[in-house]
Image (cartoon, rainbow, N blue to C red; front, side, top):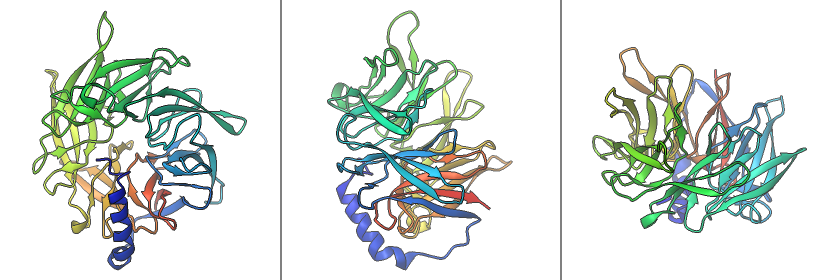
Amino acid sequence: MDLQRSPNLRLFRNVFTSVFGLALLLPTAPAQTFTVLHSFGAPGDGYDAEGGVVMDSKGNLYGVTYEGGSKGDGIAYQLVPNGDGTWTENDIYDFGSQAGSFPATTLAFNSKGNLFGGTFLGTIFELIPNNGKWSAVTISSLVKGEPGAVVFDAADNFYSPVDGNGPRQQGSLLTPSKLNQYSTILLYLFTGGQDGGTPNGPLVFDSSGSLYGTAVQGGLSVGNVFKLTPNQGRPGWHETTLYSFKGSPTDGATPYAAVVFDSFGNLYGTTTAGGSAGYGTVFELSPNSDGTWTETVLYQFQGFQGNDGDYPYGPVTLDSSGALYGTTYGGGPCDCGIVFKLSKSSGGQWTETILHTFTARDGSGPSGALVLDKAGNIFGAASFGGPYDSGVVFEITPN
């Protein structure tokens, strides 16, 4: 099930937060400042802020909303800091024509400063800036599949997982053969068996050019982490399953987000389910000298009944000290989600700190990646909540 776009879940969340959110809201005294930079949903604006945000070299933020705008099919937006603590939102593209409808991924920059992303209806698009205005190009239209966020190699070729575009509708991976030509090459077709199925989160490269990602299904039935390596001397790529999740009560299940590398070659990620309470985990995969990988569950979420988060649909982000930052879609007193930090002690134990608990008024249902700037400020988006219940972009500033 796609949690973000489930009508039943959206209805449940609206009813739950409106009836119970204020009653369960507890005063807190956080060690940081939370600020809503923009609330979506005003007439003509976007709503349902899918995915996360990306930042350019000037500190501007970019993202998409699943719906809204002049055609109702979603927008791409830019947020520009004004210097006085406020931000200005610019609607840089209205979907519903050349680039498809209902954008649903976090955007990604290529080396030219163009933005790439995918839509729920199966297109991969490119947004091109020109003297303050943006135009759109449809790169690929996929009849059977929803593309994930893209990642670029050194030559600006891009790679994207596709949910449901392969044999048995288990997903595939694609890339254009050459920049600006956009002919599609299928790198690998998942079978839904031990190799996994339904790849969802964006991919990540290692230093040798191999790709790493997660599959929601397959493995031991509850998803895995995989590696794709180019074949030597012949076309195609081959897949290696690094780890298959086992599910509750000892392990995670159904990873939806990307994995990230640290400087030692370890991988970190999240699962949306599994763990001791069934609400998801944060995990680490460490490479062994024999080519295998060892998984360690770093944290198991306890859900809103324990005033903790639940269902981390987004990835974790590493800071320079090795701490991990992320969000959970639900949890907290009103089940609206949290922003968390995991810190490693000298003894090797990981401790969770809740940086912010959403209240519905200031956002609900965060599911995308967080962005950290050089000053340690944290930026992200929540799918719902805010004055119009249409999502927000937020900043957390350490005090």
